[in-house]
Image (cartoon, rainbow, N blue to C red; front, top):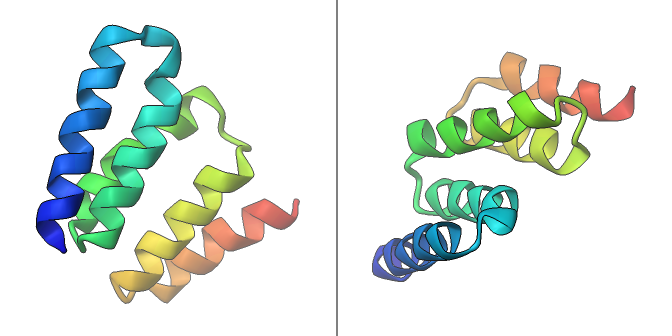
Length: 86
């Protein structure tokens, strides 16, 4: 399964190089692939890039919360989940 995520990440990185307008969408997908492959540090890195651009984006806040929850950091997860409700 991890091989599939690794290949997806390569494809999305390539798409970003070819079409800069797709950078944010690709970063979300790359972050999600890292999350699903349990590479939480990389997932957070990509989601944080997106939050710098759109700090109130509900999808990204949700992904941040999911990542922290998967890492066992329930306090940080809750912090991001609560930001979605605001």
